[in-house]
Image (cartoon, rainbow, N blue to C red):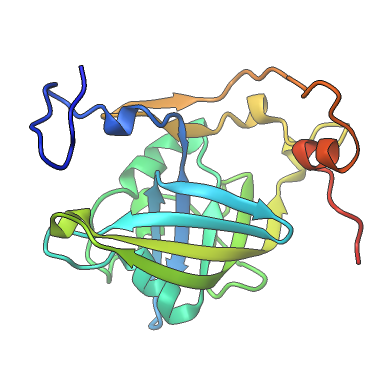
Amino acid sequence: MHYAPGTDVCPLPFSPFKSCTVPRPIGWLSTVSPDGVANLAPYSQWQNLTFDPPMVMFAANRYPDGRRKDTVVNAEATGWFVWNMATWDLREAVNISAMALPAEVDEFERAGVTKAACVDAPGPRVAESPAHFECRLIAIHTLPGDSPVGMVDVVYGRVMRIHVDDAVITAEGKLDIPRIRPIARMGYYDYTVVDSTFEMRIPQGEGAEADGLEGRPPERR
């Protein structure tokens, strides 16, 4: 089967679009409003962009009435947002924080997670999460949609500080992903959990190429 999303009615009872690009990492993002209210929300359109310097992006669809998400509003107002790794143990808190709540509601309290202070960003991070990025806003680009909810704000940030819990670092200095058990978004209401990994190395990969793929940091300049 095939169809043109812009002109054809989807021939399936559920759109396959969101279930093809999978699994999608979760941007569990915390921000703070200018008047001090903490916000916490998950976004499944989240990704690394590059690593030198480390930069990230997330995309936030607007509400049906055209309003921007609080995460976008707060990031623009303060210049910062924080990524918190979403894990199997934190899955219920992640799901609760996905609720559409008024801007004056503290979603850390609603989700039952603890605030930990950041070093550079003005807002808090989730203390129970094993890894965090403090991100300084670079830019926000708004892309039009065919409906108000289809309009999306794409937010770019530079990672200024990385936090990792020492307990989830292996003896060789890597993140122990099977122990952390990050969760990721599938399609529909489905999620998955990473609890096993396997290694593949590019044939004849060496030098800077191999270092970049493995994540060896470049020499300090």
